[in-house]
Each structure stands twice: as structure tokens, then as C-alpha cells.
Length: 589
Image (cartoon, rainbow, N blue to C red; front, side, top):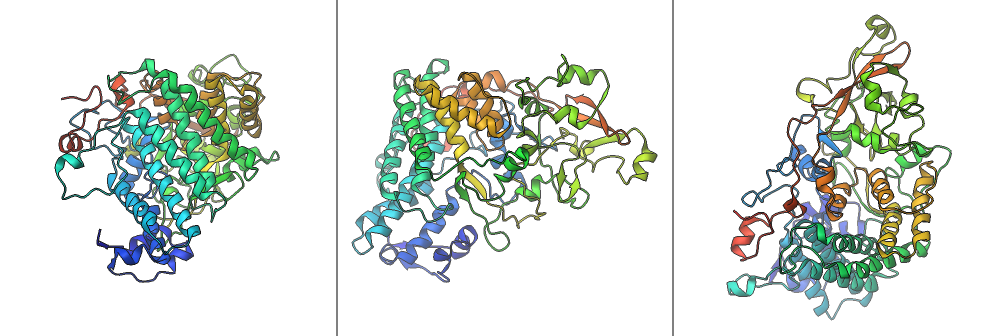
């Protein structure tokens, strides 16, 4: 590789807040020899890598359609919410087939892996860099490569493992690397993370950089995935050569690796759950707004003129003070039902009665917001916006009508919400997302709110699940699960069960892009993702401040289909053809 072309505008957009990188104010075309012997130029090269690493997939997509399809694709597929305009994705309704492999949530990015391999080869060959700098950058590169392969393996199963910079002018046979088994890819990820941990220990720069702690988080997550895939191997369409699926005998080794990584992070004492018992709802909401001791690594944004995201612009709840876009992602009623009550009453019940919410709604009665949500898990109202949730100092409105228009007008209440439930927005479920929103009314291209990549709460849940799979350390796993529940004000559990793990991961990690992948690795997606989902319409008695709720069953105008082959995505067809790769089961055409 004789010359490396570095586009400064791209680097500035992605890591404008990292002053050591942004000290570089001008780079033209420079030789590869110059880059890999100059720490400033290497930092610039890494600025490009960080900007492309997709540690939160699709978060900084600039186009609203791509934002929904990529960033919110997994949440939509995982039945957490829908586009208010009834947008759907081909892989949600079963139109995922062997001849339709260019899907927005796909991530076959070997060009990025090539650039990481370039960094590793050149850094290892360098003789003039300081050992501290060289080890820091090598550690970051090994992490990036492990992360890239994790994103591949969780989508496609076994993939080609390429660790060298291939010569594109070489013979086609030398360039066609066969797919490794799924197990081998996870083992490769583990080895890469072990190297990264050794190199990065004691070298944390900031939470926006890869650190030894981020390495432990990824290892905790990736090895948990591998363990659960092996444990549930019998529920899968298999290939004879192990390209998808992992032998059940390997489950405990992967679980042990996950629990070791989790324990090391917890024992470090560097991180702690964010807890404020005085206002548990605000405490949980602020966890995703302000830097705190629970966040291990975050994606940093600087806003206008730099790297930005469109979370606030596209998700804000459209209060009267700020009407632009908003509520693009609308949570389903089923998500609210998932949050149980503080005393352990199931969340689908109307509190204090023997009726479910749905049974009660059919009777046409009016209920106060306190009756509906007052005794719920504190995380609910920190995650999902309901009528009168405050945003930018004003209440959010979701009602379709009021019972007394004259009284409403006299009290300056709009007669209906801002067209969020009808017309082109008829897919709106009657709820919004509040998690991650800091109440600053950014427009498109302005968002500067940082977003957590890894946090301790997930690691507690990883530990509990791995302990259950390992059938060891169950008391510690239960403790960590109960610590999560205590923060939300819930009664403690007396034992650790798989259903508890499924429940707590669903509500604690909602909208953090875990649910879809969890259901796939547990092989439960067919059970949960093949039912029609719903919302509600609200009628407001303003004088009594009560609401009548009507079930809205047509928020999705398509039939959800998750078939056995969908536990893995099809390998892109052009790759199957050009690289002579075997396609995944169920996608031949």
C-alpha cells in the first residue's frame, strides 16, 4: 500500500472533539511510510476508523429513512416499536430471501476490516514509534477487528476470517477465503479481545476511546452470545459443516469466558450503577443523558460542524413548542405491558383489579394516569412517553379528542394532538420514546448528545445469564439482577430463572438494540415475533384529568413473519457468487 488518502472533512466530522486528532489541520496525499512513522498522522488514520466502526449501528445516519432502517431496524424487527407512518422493513414481514440480500441491517463490511488489518500490519512493523503509543493503537485495532467480526457473526454465522491485507491483483483463488465455522469466529473474537486487553491495560484516555474496560464489556457480551447459541443449538436449522450453530458441549466454556470478563469489570471498582432513590424515574432517564459512573464507553457527538446524530430531531415527542419531525419511532402497547408493577404484579394487569389492561379498556371507563402508571416499574416513564410526560417544559399530547371541547379551550388545551394518530401518521401507537432524549430541541444535523455504547447495567445482566447457563455463581447472579431491580423500585426475586433474565433484559435494555439479537440467540424469535402488535387511542376528560383508552390493532398493516431460516441473514448474493461462499440454510434460489 504505497499511498494512503485521508479525507480530513470526514475525520473532522467524526472526531472533532478529540483535540489530539484535531490538531491535524491539513493532510493531503502522504506516503504510507510517512503515516506509520508519525503519531499525529496515525491518530488521523484512527479518527477515520473510529468514525466508521459503527459501535452503535446506524446511529449517525444523516438520512431519516436510513436512520429508521438501520439504527431502528433491529428495534422494529424486535417488536419494540414502529415508524409512525407505518414504514416496514422487508425482513420484518418475511420478504427476506436468497435473492434479496442487500438489507439495511446487513453489515458485510470487509473494507473496514481491511483498513484495520492495514493498521495492525504497519504498527507491528514500525521501529520508530514509542512502545506506549504503539501498544495503545494496536490494542484499539484488535478491539475494532473483534467488534467487526462480532457484528458479522451475529448476523451471518460463520464468515471468512481475514487477518492480512490482501493484494487485490493476486489470483482469485488466493483472495477467496472460505467461511469459518460460527464457533471458530467466536473463538477468534475471544483471542483478539485477549490481545487488546493486555495491550490496553492501564491506558484509558477517555470514555469515547477504546479502553481495557470496553474490551471486557465486548467480551462479556460476545461470549454470552456464543454460550447461548451453543446451549440452544437443537432449535436450529443446521449445516453439516458448522457454518451456523455451535456444538452444545462448548456452551459452558463460552459462558465461563463471559462471566470472567464481567467479574473482572465489576471487581475493578471503576464503575457503579447510577442510583438515586429519591426519584428513580429521573435517575434512570439521566443515565442516558449525562456522563456518569455507570457508562463504560460512549459515542461522542459535537453537533453542528462536527459529528452529530439525529436522535432528538427525529424522536422528540412533538410538543407545541417544537413541531419539527418527531415521534418517528412509536413504541407498541406490548412494551408498556412488559413493565411490571413495583410489588411484582404482572405489567399487563390493571393495577388493583383482576382485569388485564385490554379487558378493562373494552369496558370504556376513564382512568387517571396514576391508576395506569403510578405503581409501575420506575423505568417505564424514563423510557416511554405517555400523555402529559413533560418535555422541554411542556406536556406531551397524544389524545385524539376531548370530552368537553369548551372546557379544554378555556384551559388552553388543544382539542387533539398534533396529527400523530391519524392521516399519514396513522401508524402511531399512542406512545413515544423518551429514553436518550435530553430535551434540547436539535434540528437535523445538530444533535450533540453523547450515547452510551457499554454500561455496567448490561454487564450485571450478562453475568446473571451466564451464571444461569453455567449453573454456577447463582447467588451472585441473583444479587446483580436484584440490584438492577432495586434501582427501579421493584421487589427482589428469590431465585434466578431464565424467564427472569428475559424479562429484565427486555425492560432494562429497551431501545438499546439488544431485544432482536437476544430473541435470535435464544432461538425464541418465532415465539415472540410472529404476532400482530398494537397501540391505543386516547380520549381525554380534561376536567377530571382522566382518559378513556381504545385498543388500536391496526398500527401494522402487514403480517409479521419470522421463519426458522431468519435466525441468520442471507450472505449477500454478490459475495456468494464472487467469493464462492456457501449460502446460509433456507436462502437458496
